[in-house]
Length: 445
Image (cartoon, rainbow, N blue to C red; front, side, top):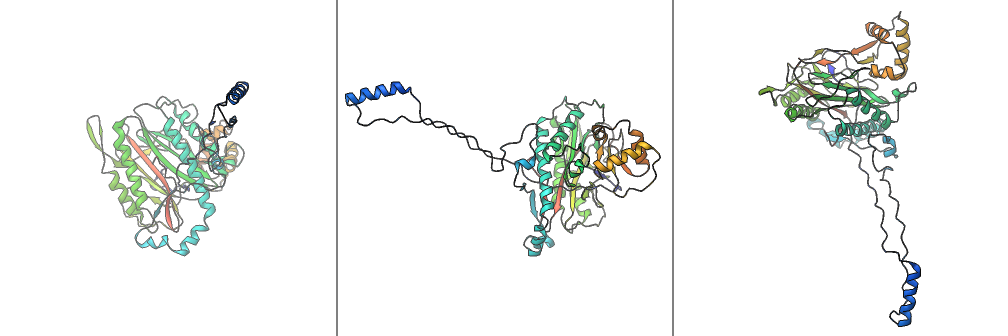
């Protein structure tokens, strides 16, 4: 989920691991053929009388086929659409580890330091929750990548992803407080073309994905508030391949550069250099890919998607350093337009502020809605479809009152100029004491 320049981000923790593959033993086929017993007996009697055989041939028994065994983790495969909880696939609670990258230069000692190894071991619950959420994200997004096609509505796509996340985390979010325990870390962003971030369909939206669209798919998964924030871009026309490659390359450059004691300005410079080395050929014109300079990555804290640190995607003078134990979303946005976004279109994303002011609310629906938001989402982002799902009706007046009172933050869609195209890739990284773990890494990106 994107953080705009100058806005405090609501943080989320994420982890990465690799796609689960389980093996199963094939059933053994019978090794002999059965014959009619009475005919065999007659043949044997005749053979003995004629002296053609010296010993009695024993009839082979038909072996029963063995049942297929489940994989070592208990379940052979995930269903399609994904509905098998990840905890059932990993009953021992040992979830796949993300991509581990050793620290470099002055931090290289951390890999072998006994003190740092001890600190790493005592973070076991934290890592388990992150890796659990990361595996949910991987399996749901890879299903989405295989199944999203032009002609589908954005609502159908968003609900498909969200149904998968809720099933795989084991938290449907309909009972009071369940969504705070696990489920969607933030709403599914499906931003098209010149819109870069924070767009998800509201109720009644009839938008249909087209062959020529470039769609950013950005969603979060959380367990106990440990948010895995990861995003990718889908396009169905190869003319946009370079645009997608630019954003993916830039995000990987940011992941490589990030680490303990690394300055934000150095990360931004590495991202910009990678992104702006690409061009896109559109309509006979060669267009440079620009970083969207007022969008940033961000730190993530428990139950909050945006922390108090921003990760720029252009070079600058920010001397803030990353620190041990922090979690960051490294996300980059490339554009064929101006490389600058503004608020546009109808708002769908909201989040209660962590330090919301205690102000009197004169609109009764605002008081009722605030109580529901606090019990069901806390400070986790939500969208209007989630309020609909909980049974709220005619809540817009109350919601707008909460926003104007400074209790809830609205996150409108962020768009470059019309006619331009934007792409995004994002990973969550954990700055563990001994290694950097790209918790959301998968075989897909």
